[in-house]
Length: 93
Image (cartoon, rainbow, N blue to C red; front, side, top):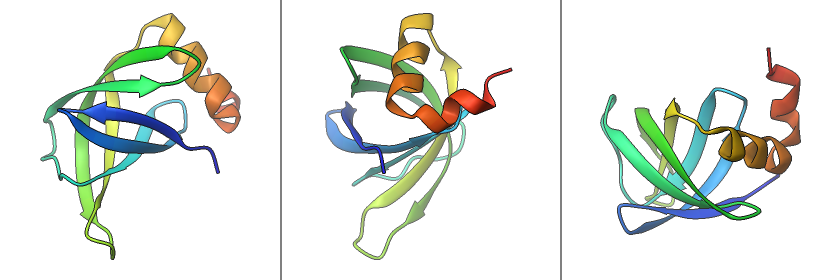
């Protein structure tokens, strides 16, 4: 499993998945649907991702799995994400 570290609102996160449209990450805070999120992700280089929360689910360890979609996604960020999550490349149009 690919794991990318980053931060959202000063909180550390673990980005667990990107399928070309949907992001999944784990953090200590939940986020309401529609809430804008600015994520600093440590990919090949540091990338800023502008996301909108779809919802959060509490995990057994007390953290939250957050699902989000991209509000905007610059080409360098998309390319770095596709390199980090190669299975997402198959979902490209």
